[in-house]
Amino acid sequence: MSNQKKRPSLSGPGLKKEGVVVLQTLFILIFVSLEIWVRSGAGILSGLIICLVTYGGVAYGRKGTRYVSAVTPPLAYAATTLLMTILNDGLRPSRVGIDFVASLASVAPFLLISALYSWFMFFNEKAKNRPSKRLQTLPEAR
Image (cartoon, rainbow, N blue to C red):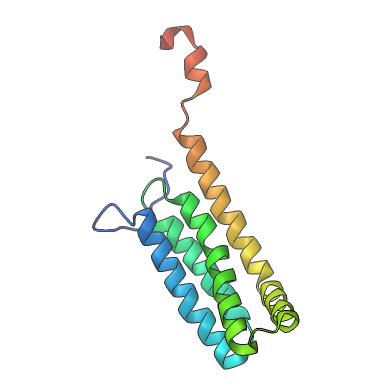
């Protein structure tokens, strides 16, 4: 019996870095824009989408795509929110700034949870790829 966790099955090797970025950005753009347009602000739907695309990027990406899966969602969310805020409020810096910060604050717990999960997975993958120091120091391993 092995103690390896079973990953979701895919017919191919998984998404490349570019695919992870495009899909995460696309889902965040669509759902966050819709929520801001309908509710006039970001909320739980945006937060759940951030968590889902982070998990999807980690689970369905190829080996080596964990960094991209960790970095893309906050950047895509910030860009989408800023764009939608400018479209809704116009080019009034004080109003755009307040709405942008309020939008970031409303999804902060979701951003934090997603970031913790994705960075943990990134550093875990990095640690597993490193050769064991124990095997290098044992005399019979040489």
